[in-house]
Amino acid sequence: MSRPVSAMEECYAKLTELGLLIQDILNDCMGLPPGFLKEYNSDRGLDVMVALRYFSSSSREGEEIGLSEHEDGSCVSFVFQDGVGGLEVLKDGQWIAAEPADGSIVVNIGDVLRVLSNNTFRSATHRVVRKAAHRHSFGFFWSIHGDKWVEPLTEFTAKIGDAPQYRGFKYNEYMQRFMKSRTDPQARPEDAFSVSHYAI
Ligand SMILES: O=C(O)CCC(=O)C(=O)O
Ligand SMILES: [Fe+2]
Image 1 (cartoon, protein in one colour):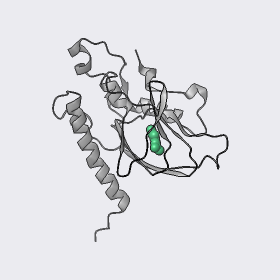
Image 2 (spheres, rainbow, N blue to C red; image 1 turned 30 degrees about the vertical axis):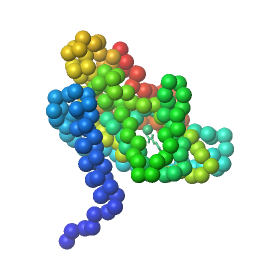
Image 3 (tube, rainbow, N blue to C red; image 1 turned 180 degrees about the horizontal axis):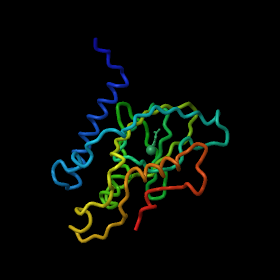
Image 4 (cartoon, rainbow, N blue to C red; image 1 turned 45 degrees about the vertical axis):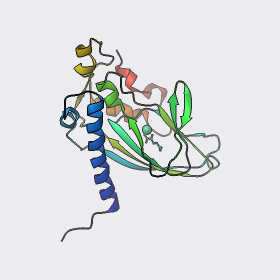
């Protein structure tokens, strides 16, 4: 007898479809050979879906930040947020609010695409500040397999005469450092990590 598919599983499946679609679009935008990203990133084992709850500012006195600034470690991320607000993106040294808009999804480039595109498609620095009300968001991180080698692609280096801006790394190694730096309470200063660790 077949089991009814839960709402979460259905949601995960839909987001996987969305990831494939956006990945194809990005493949074109990046001027890569047709189907390149699809083949490079054919394993869905590390994609993650999370439900997040941020406590209100009044219930966390002196703790203005709900999620400290970071770039996503994914290939691409999707965020759904409720109407409370608090997500901010760093642009030219200023924090800009990503205002909630009904029916919209925030799409973020992650570090994997940043490195593959040799810093052309940049993972945005973002954070969440607490607001007067509790906030809920939902994230889906479109990732790659841990054994994948990540390095600037020739389309963004040799083929256009640009030097690589990152040295290559295995995704697993990157992820371990990334996760260690994202602990709560805040990571020890010596665990601080961003993709600039691999910058040449
Ligand atoms: O809650 C949000 O709006 C963003 C969450 C986020 O940036 C993350 O989980 O990486
Ligand atoms: Fe994030």
